Image (cartoon, rainbow, N blue to C red; front, top):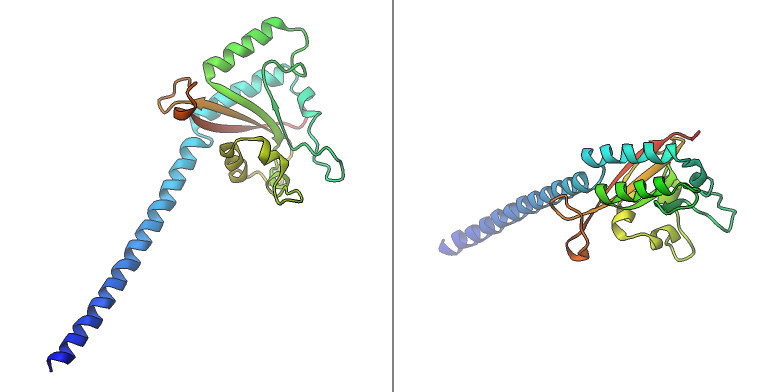
Length: 196
């Protein structure tokens, strides 16, 4: 009789442990999912960074951003496929002879903690599917991994126009950052109409 009871207790213990492990795995998976969602919310398209990016867009559109957009190319038959252009205040394509404007642009970049500015097509489906013979896109090898993650996470399929992406480099407290070890990259993008 005692052996039958011992077998039943053993099986009952195994069942309880299996249920507990399943429950804990479910809770862990839910926690990781929420944690990743919060990270995306904090680092990608946060309201404060979108607000800054809107004014950066207005400034560059007023300075002839159409000159930059003419360098974009998504023709797959072309040898020079260029889905993403990085530009900044020193770019001769935006500023011709405007030393004062170039100085203002530098000041704006410093005050807003801008690390890089990119222009691409608003519809990122071709960029997200971009692959070369090694299975990687040359765009993703030119940019840092956090920008690559951002580019893979945004939508906009089927919408025409351009996307201005601003990369902000700050410490965890919103201050300018020069120490790479403690810097964080934040991204925001806004639509730029096709007829600049």
